[in-house]
Amino acid sequence: MDILIALYDDRMKIKIAKSILFILLTFGTCYHALGQRKNYSVKNAHAHNDYENELPFFTAYKAGFRSIEADVFPVNGKLYVAHDKTSITLEKSLQSLYLEPIFKTLSIDKSRHLILLVDIKENYRISLPILIKELRPLQAIIDSRQLKIVISGNRPAPSEFNTYPDYLYFDDDQSRKSSPEQWGRVGLVSLRFSSLSKWKGIGKMEKDERLKIKFTVDSVHKAGKEIRFWGSPDSPEAWKMLMKLKVDLIGTDKIAQLAAFIERN
Image 1 (cartoon, helix red, strand yellow):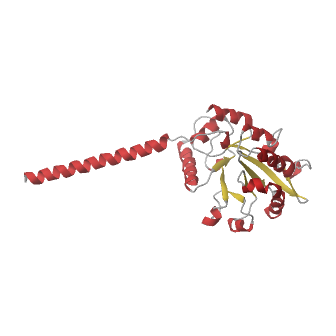
Image 2 (image 1 turned 180 degrees about the vertical axis):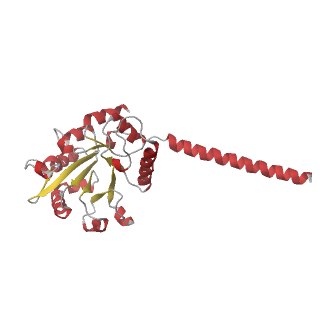
Image 3 (image 1 turned 135 degrees about the horizontal axis):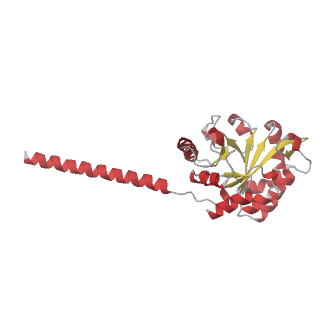
C-alpha cells in the first residue's frame, strides 16, 4: 500500500510539474506576442488623394512615403487625375503628375521602392488598357520591383485578374472570393474604417471595435498581405491607434504632420 501511495504521489508531482510548465510556456508565448512592437517609419505612410497637394507626388516622395494614391478617369485615350469628373484639367494627366516623375526619380535612386495605388473612378475595361500603355516606359523599374502598381476602385473581378499583365496587382476589400492563384494577384487589402468602427479619433475606442480591427489586421497578415484603412480619422491620436493595431499603411492627407509624428514615435 505504501508503495502504491508513493507511486501515486510521484505521478501527481509529475502531472503538476507538466501543468505548471505548460502555463509558463503559454503565458510566456502570449506575453512575447503582446510585447512585440511593429517598427514604423515613413515607409508605412500612404498619401491619400495625393494629387490635391500643392506638389503632387514630390511632397510625399521627399517625405519618404512608400505608398501614393491617384484617382483617375479615362478621357480620349488618356488617364487624367481628379477626384471627380468635373475637376479634370488637361495639365493633370497621370503621365505628367506621376508616371514621368516616378520614372525620373526611381531611375536615379535605385534603393527606393514605391507603391502607386491607381484608383480607377470609371470603367476599368477602358482605363486598364490605357494604363498598361502608359506604363510601358516604366517597365524596367516595374520589373526590378522598385515600383508596384496596385489597382483600386473600379477594378475587375478576381476571375479576370489573369487577363491582365502579371505586374498589375489588385486591391482587395474582402467582399469577393478568390482562388489561391487569384489571391496571389492581390497587392493590398483596403477596408473602409467605418465598417469596423465609429470612432472619430477622440477619446477611447470601444473595446469591441478595437478587437474587431485587431482580428481583421491579424487575419490579413496571416494571409500574407498588407492592410490599410481608408476613411479613418486623420489625427495623431488615430495614427497612434492604427500603429498599435499594426496596420501596415497609415493613410493621410497631412503628409508633413504624419511624417513628423512617425519620426517622433
